[in-house]
Image (cartoon, rainbow, N blue to C red; front, side):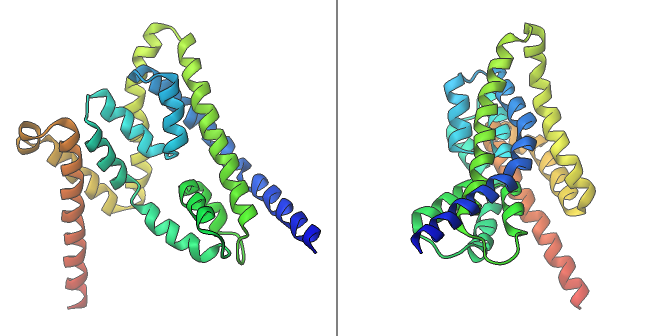
Length: 239
């Protein structure tokens, strides 16, 4: 009986690895670019790899690089990262219902390994998801992200100086590439981006706050404004 259970666990883990291969491949160019940009931002190879190992969140890591580049403080970076990744609370709660009952430390691993991509692969699997499958999906995705971040950093070392300097522009181009598709799908996202950008450009924010706190404050205020408008609009429809 124990042999059968052990074989089942290995099989689940193998299926998880297979299910996460597409994520691992998709992470390669993004992680390579992150590593390259991290070098041009001034991070060491150790700092770059540790960020990928401990954070494991693409958008948050890119935002951190942009904040580091303008000399933002640690508290502002932490708060901004928290705001960007707050959706993970909802994904963790949803995935907790999907996964089989397990020990707390394994659930903590699930929570850490959740990204938009791993969440999608695990949540669309039919029935209850076994631990081995979730671990396989997350482990191969995590390994690809961390390894390719380091590879990207070393690739940056062999690039000519003028290309390394130009990569700071690529950081902002990456954000535009992340934002535009979301804006096309949702008017709410477009409104949020416009309001946040406008607030961050006002004298009230730029003269009284540092770059990092200005971004955090503009994001929070714009989110409150957008949600208030949506609520008022919803009330208007019910009346």
